[in-house]
Length: 193
Image (cartoon, rainbow, N blue to C red; front, side):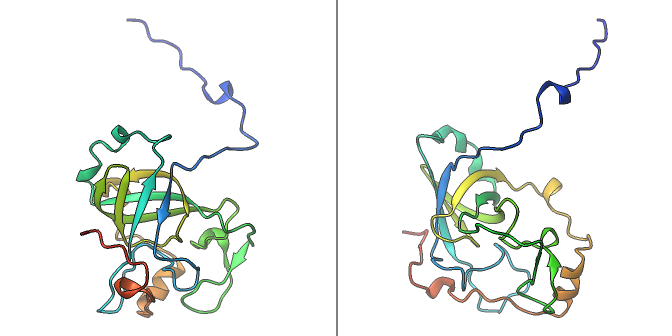
């Protein structure tokens, strides 16, 4: 069989000036305000009595059919890609909430105020009922739009022994970040019921 010449797909489509995204669902979270909402979905150093919050992702049936969740039950963690819709402006530098009060480049942080306010959370998937996913360890406010969900796959998503810049220095101080609500907060969602 003859070898076909390679195709140049890059030149086939112009670089986009604008990108349109549409929510596929929304978070139902106990967090109604930014203060007290965890800054990450999973924290490495937490107090001994820490209990991560439970939330749900409600997918929109007019966009996501039930079959799109086929085989999702076997994954312990999922990536939740969200649109941080309350953030209208951004700065090129921010002061992170932990560690020394030093301004860092926004793209060297996980601050929600970004050029495109996209959130990325690796949450624990507890169960699925229809188009509702019960998750643990949420760092998103109630009604945050969800753009996509992807399975967390250890072989390509976990790099436990890499250097993480100034974050490693903060982690070495053992400074804890506390979820001020936990399971005893108002609006707690019990996945057992």
